[in-house]
Amino acid sequence: MDLGLKGKWALVCGSSTGLGFACAHSLAQEGVNLVMVARTASTLAASADRIRQATGVEVIALASDVSKAQDRLQAVRAAPQIDILINNAGGPKPADFRELSRDDWLAALDTNMLAPLDLINLVIDPMIERGFGRIVNITSIAVKAPVDMLILSNGARAGLTGAVGSIARQVARHNVTINNALPGRFDTDRLRSNNLKRAQLSGRTVEQEVEMQVANIPARRLGVADEFGQACAFLCSRQAGYISGQNILIDGGLFPGLL
Image (cartoon, rainbow, N blue to C red; front, side, top):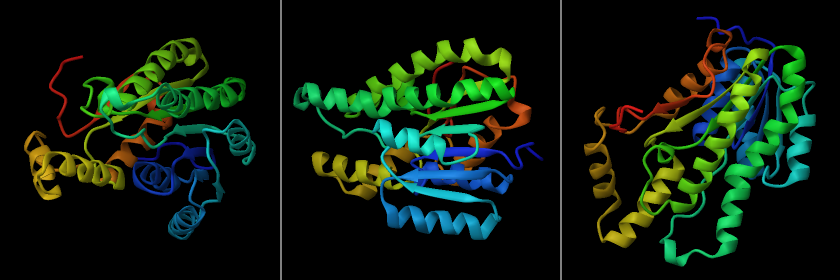
C-alpha cells in the first residue's frame, strides 16, 4: 500500500534506537525525509546512516535534548517544513512512590508531557495552513492500565493524553490528526533495563521476569519494534485522515478492557 507520504518531512524524537528508530525507518521506507533527534550523537549518526543507505531519503541527524526549549526550536527549524511529528521520549525512572521528590515529578512532567505539547504548538499552525499534518505521540499502555513502579510515566503520559485529546478535536477539520500509540511490551533496551531492575528487586532472574511477562500476553511473545513502526507509519498516512484523537494499543492483546 502506498501511504501517500513520499517527499514529506517528519520530525522523529528519540529515534536513534527502539520504537523511535522503528517509526523513523518505516516512514523512510515510504519516502519520507527525516529529522532524527536523540541525545547520543554516535548512536544517532549510525542510525541515520543506516536509514539513508537503506531508503535513499534525506536524513538530518540532530544530537539534542528535546526537553530543552532551544533544542526543540532547532529541531523544528532543521527541515523546510514538518508534515509529521513523532513525539517520543524515554520514560522516567522506575521508583516506589515514597522515593520520589517534587523535582522528580517536575522533570517527568517536563519531558513526557510539556515538551511534547510545546513541539505540537511549534508545528501545528503551519500544518493547518498546508492542510495536512500527522502527529503521533508514543505513550504507553500505562495510560490505560498503570504499570507498577512506573508511577512517573503513568502520571505524565496520562496528562499528555488528556491535553492532546482536546487539541485533536480542534484541528481535525484541517486534515491534521493527532493520535497516541500505546506500546505494550516490546523487546527494546528500555524493557531490558526495566526487567533488570525488577529482577534485582524480586530476586528472580531477568529470564524469569521475561517469562512472567510473556505468559500474560495473549500473543505469547514480546513485540518486535518493526511492528510498532509500521503501525506508526500508517497513522501518518493519507488513508488515516479519519483517525484522530485515539489511543491505539499495540500490545499483542495484553490490555483486557473494552475502552
